[in-house]
Image (cartoon, rainbow, N blue to C red; front, side, top):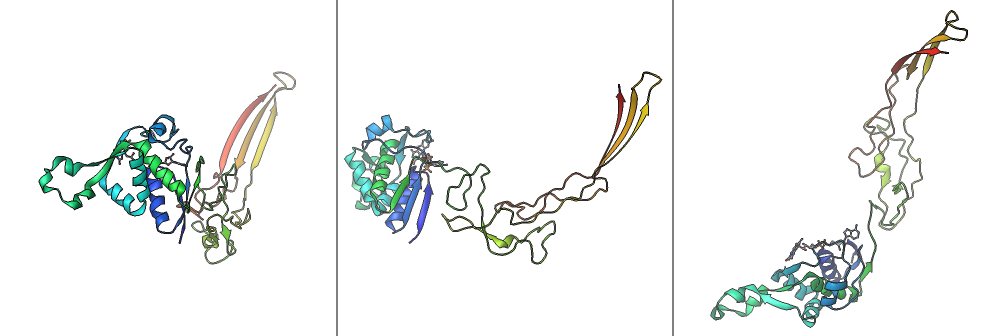
Length: 273
Ligand SMILES: Cc1cc2nc3c(=O)[nH]c(=O)nc-3n(C[C@H](O)[C@H](O)[C@H](O)COP(=O)(O)OP(=O)(O)OC[C@H]3O[C@@H](n4cnc5c(N)ncnc54)[C@H](O)[C@@H]3O)c2cc1C
């Protein structure tokens, strides 16, 4: 059976966790809001801090399908709702005359409740399940290919290196600067083994040349002069590639997408005094 991570303990996250756990999987849920401070739906409406679900205190109707799924995978939730005073409602039976009611019409039964009560029942049921764990309050931020929640200031996550990325066919071309297949995602929860600097990027071949000529202007005043100067930056106009794209999730992974500046020439005329 699988180990599954769910981000968000809302209706969808909790419902999925209950269904997956009932099928024998182990589930961890990460939720940024704190857990419920109560086991009563009414108190949850008053007290539960769910600042990241703006509609939390809205009245909700939960469809018959959700009740059918709960009866199959999490009947404890239906029992908890009943114990908390949540009324079941069968829209079909409300409008259809009793003489055409049939036993199977119970499949049209859903719930009318405030969302805190419904979510609380899901949450308490999930907390009681042996194979569901919570990391709460905990916020998932950034991209984490490793599952190690590594949040260095650079946001860096290192991959596994399985061969030498600087050799092999067609490397060191603009569209394939290094062998991208040498890097793989580490298994979930495991650090990648690649060292920093595993890829050798293009070198720099840059010449900056300046020429200047100073013309004394002693006829104006002693020490005054005019200087004519010209600067040639990247004088030989070498194409100089920037670093290759090392982000494994990027569309341009492994490519050179930009260059350093082409030749630039500037002239200056300075009056010195
Ligand atoms: C006004 C209104 C009325 C509605 N009425 C009904 C109704 O009557 N019946 C009905 O079935 N549906 C109704 N809905 C829709 C229903 O509320 C949503 O479909 C439902 O909430 C979706 O559940 P969810 O779990 O996908 O998302 P949410 O309920 O939004 O839950 C997402 C969870 O993920 C957490 N989370 C998000 N990002 C992170 C992160 N980076 N790290 C950790 N945790 C994170 C949040 O804190 C939150 O707990 C209504 C919606 C609105 C707005």
